[in-house]
Length: 136
Image (cartoon, rainbow, N blue to C red; front, side, top):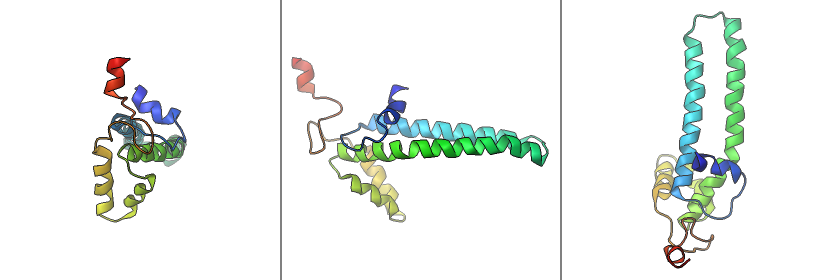
């Protein structure tokens, strides 16, 4: 759970590097929150309520979803940029997502690629150096 919430603690930290684990655990956390809100909405929708009662319940649920999306937007962009930094790529590579069809595949490749070992131009290795762990 610590890895899932780490990007929220590093809210708007765009410098440095993030491991694959941090990126993908945050993505999983966002997926789980979205699925939970969606499943609750679907469950409530299947109940045979009046339209007024439905809007009384669904309105706050939709507002909660929008609020979570707004809260998670900046940490999502920040962890994505730090993930690109870990692979020794500029954060501007996030703009590949704007290219139809292939942009998402290019970004996916960047996200699953192992980060550079040791120091790179964006900072120290987030996994730490094996040499320093042995001699520490």
